[in-house]
Length: 213
Image 1 (tube, rainbow, N blue to C red):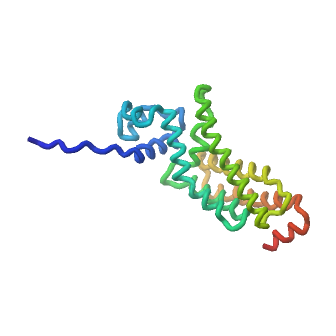
Image 2: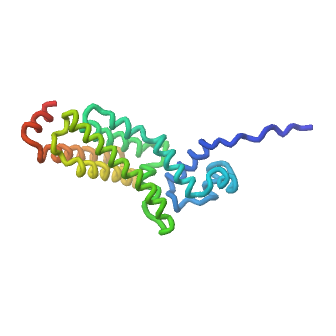
Image 3: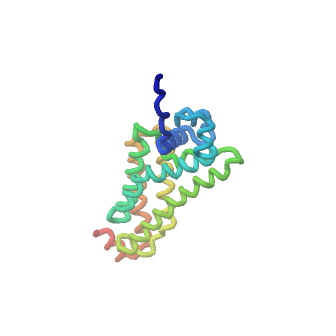
């Protein structure tokens, strides 16, 4: 009698990673259940059994992306000054956005921006992750004020929104095929803007102190 052997164990994490990559590359609405099942190496009933629905799978894929692809951002925010953090935030991420081994751009920026009205909850879900990026930037700027490398009175709300907007724009440009050199030029311009925004309304003594550091 020929032994049939044990069935292959379902690797849920690997299946989720494959779903993440497909959503990242194609977007939420453009990705079908049949495509997801094929990419994950399972059939549609198994997909539903393991993840519940396409929407639930996408939410889990976004959370998995945030957990596994956030090193560029979190490393940047640990830089010694707020300015260094903002520069690293842009440059680290633009390198990640153009990694030839992965879909271009940021999944959180690209995967569910537009779509049918019935998918509005999905768009709101992803938007919360984008708003969290603004909050992380805001917290780093507040720390900069506390540590003395950002002058008191700096408009951190505007600067946080500005750098989040540039960051998201880099993702879109990367997805459209921009080169790293082109994206680094955008980062250069953003850092020139930082120097103007941070010191524009600061007292002269504070500007001198920050410049001397």
